[in-house]
Length: 120
Image 1 (tube, one colour):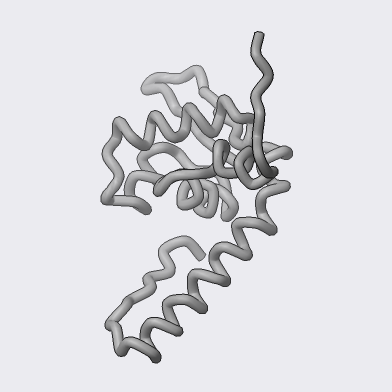
Image 2 (cartoon, rainbow, N blue to C red):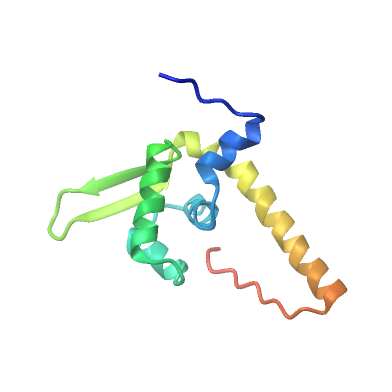
């Protein structure tokens, strides 16, 4: 088996949390356990297929846990794993930077940007 080669450590991070949806999913799970339908409501622009794919990839990477309850109808919940909790400082920094970036764009470019906190 060929070794996986990274040029710098951030490549490994991006491999796990990169893309449009994974950081958003992780930020929502940072606030607590969620069912897929709850995540879908928090991210209405994501398709069900994409949400399922992203959740599977995050679970495969070990940063989220999936619990299936044996009941009718079936119930599935996702949460940050213990390992995934190690990403919380990174996620907080991304949120803080993003909020500062929005303010900069509003002031410097007079852009109308609305930040709706849905998950507090």
